[in-house]
Structure formats: structure tokens, C-alpha cells
Amino acid sequence: MKAILKKSAAAEPFSFSFVNDEGKMILRSENYKAKDSASKGINSVKKNCTEDKRYVLKESANGMFFFNVKSANGQVVATSAMFGSEQDRTEAINHVKSAAPGCEVDEQLGG
Image (cartoon, rainbow, N blue to C red; front, side, top):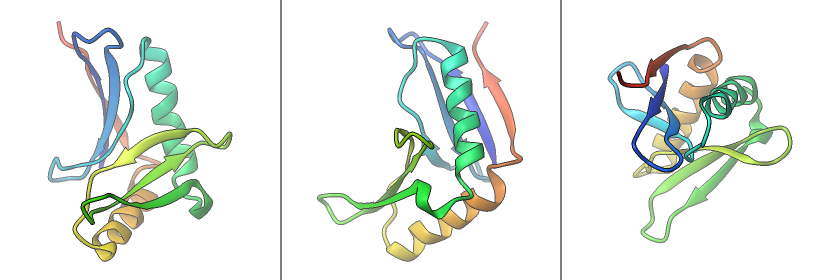
């Protein structure tokens, strides 16, 4: 797993995602105005992802399953991809818990 810090042409250009070893997105952030804010979001996920109480399990209107990771102050820091089953969602959470805390950060900020 790695965290990817990206910059786009948006008004709030910085965002991050956590991807598995196959490159599939597991978690993504909202957009941030500053790189430092996005970096803090990555660190918050790494710090909080090992605690069960930081996960909020959700089901979408179309029956897909996902989760949010919250920081210590209760703010949503990242939202997962959609999963077809609760089992797939649980496996993704377990992967985040084990792999995210020590993962590398890949800055893709463009030229």
C-alpha cells in the first residue's frame, strides 16, 4: 500500500488516496487548498486507521458498501471505494489497518 499525494488544476488542488499494491484505490480524501493540509490528512489516516472506533461503516443507496475513516476530533479524513459485499469492505479495512500506518507517500505534484 502507498499514499499518493496529488495536485490538480482545481481551485482546491491537493488530494490524497491510499492504493493497494495493485494500484487500486482503497481510500480517498476531499480536496485541500494547501499541500500541508493534505499531508496532515495522510498522517491522520496513518495514525487513526488502526483503531476500530475511527471507522464508520456505510451502505450506499444502490446497495454498495463503503467506510469513512475519522480523525480523533471526529472529522471524516478519508472515504473508501465502493465494495460489492460487506466481506470485501471488511477485507479492505483489515488491509488499511495493517498496511497504511507504515506506507510510503508518493508525491505526484506535476512539473
